[in-house]
Image (cartoon, rainbow, N blue to C red; front, side, top):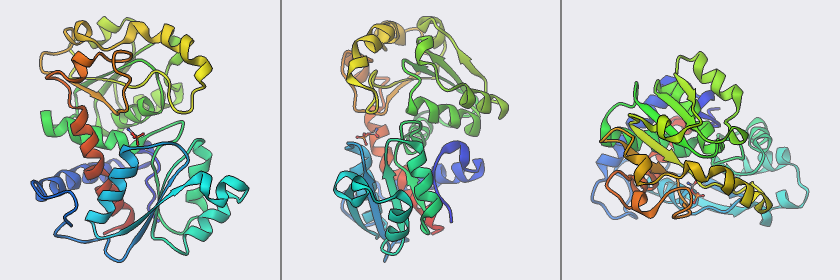
Length: 308
Ligand code: CP
């Protein structure tokens, strides 16, 4: 059984193979209509369940389209409409779904939910975001960086703002893909120390720098995300905004990065909050390539999980 639960739990060679296969598959279908099947149909005859306990645009559509391009059939399920949302255990849900489908992708709140699903399912489980991590997003980001600038190994990535679940998967990736990572944000919203220690133990240079201008000096990639994540309470909004305002990505901040630095945001963005529209729509921004690459990266992840 090969799950895709997190970047730090997946073998580094397998991660590299996923990125390379995603790039090759993207190139192979360049210029085709989105609904056209791939030449290869490695998921033909397979059924893929996509379960969402939180809202989604990119993850929902990219997994659905990607599975179909590979020949699978798909079903999109809302956690609230399942018995899962009415008291059936995760373990029983996992056992039942495993009798109907070949692969489960789940977006949920607590990490324990996805771990329990994976423990009791007899088919592979993919993490489509939890409160703690978002591994599929960062696989798409690595693919995006490398298609614009070549190997990410040895490059300097700077994360501005909240040390949230997307930031956590970037830190995992620093350890696995061998790039340097700087977090700049308020101490109250630091990333988990355990993730930082783990990436450092794998040889990555992970820095914490409170001064945003100093942090982005010479950066190859500047990344940010929304200041209030889906699992954060709306009552924390004002406090978070006050803490995070010095870490907004704007033209002034980007001018301190390397001249050929890229800008990424996993989207959805709150324009002119965590990032200005001028940066989002500017020449260094690759945000819509990132969104597209969710499709290609996840197709390779599904193939990895199913061994096809
Ligand atoms: N970036 C991302 O996961 O987008 P969605 O929430 O729209 O799926």
